[in-house]
Image (cartoon, rainbow, N blue to C red; front, side, top):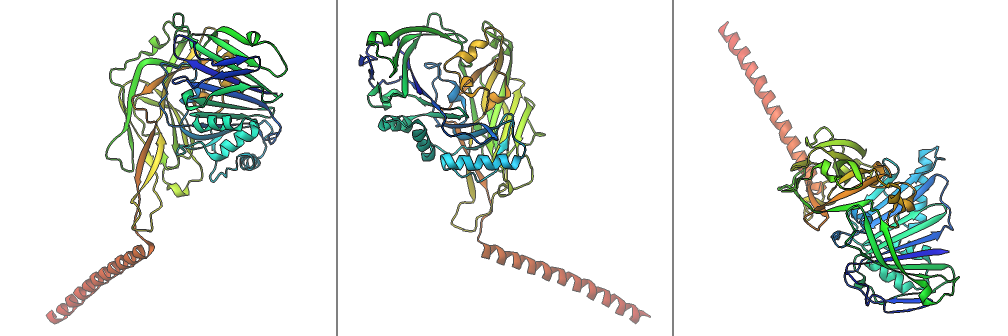
Length: 488
């Protein structure tokens, strides 16, 4: 049976007028402005994974500004890097690495119709590739989602996928989990939930914060929950439940913790990111004060496409390298790099302004004079966050219905893969809602004919000049010999 859970967060203080109509097998919710929604589908698997693959995770995130102050529930999916990311965890049966990568590429093409044109990057718990420049959810991923869910109400699912800000697909041998996040349900038409198939169970929850007893590390929710189960025929009153429950969030935001990151101008072959924290002065020891956490440290996480690399010997004094994965060849141009790019994690020693210099790789020269003399490349701004050990009721982190670790069975992909399950994250917020930066890398310009002609001319002039100099030397020596004979 397919299990479908819908969670709608109510940022107001009342659930009045949130439900339009209800019956024993029907629930209708009007478009609600400012009400975010998360959908989670769990589907029994019908297509087994190759024996070399343990898990596949596909993430896509749009480039939008997430308002954590009014919505503290759905933070995790919104802290990932914008664009498309594919993670694959190997099984314990992997003996031949080439076979593993071949299985990945064939399976990804089979289910998503996506062709992988470069090598995967091996990281802490998986291999991955990314495309940070994909602003829209790829059609191939949409089609796969529709096919795996196989819902009769195609129009409703299409509307959800067209407006989603975040998509997370987790494929395991026994099940496939699909999660979507909608920033505002007013984008949807009238939301109808009913018995569409005897094999689908819907659970819809509408919750708001109990602000009097909610804190950064403990969230209290109150609201209503409605279950549509084809195997039951209860009355509406039996299916509509008032609900109060406690959530210990793994991902948290501090109020008023904004910083600024921008590119230093002018931008050349060595782009520099400037970080300015202003009056922000968070003492690491005080981060855990009054909460369930301790042993907090500040971290910097960065994904870079292969057009850039990081020189680990030229880091600002505030950063200490924890790990770096990907191609770190300092000399190779971009067109000689087979891998996708680089993943790096640093510890930030002090929360103060600093500059981080990246290095761009040489680009393939253009052969047309009409083309630009630079290549625009897109990178995501890095993530900066505190990671803290949870010393009190750490088991509640994983039992939260909004925690992705439960669906993954372990941390696969992104910065979370470097930390234990007892870790909570406090995220700092950037001043600008734009999460991407466009960097123009200079490149050579000119067509092959012109380059060849100029090269030949330069070579000819050089040979002529050397010949002329040799003749001068030879002529000068001859004159000296002649004058010497005359003197004798």
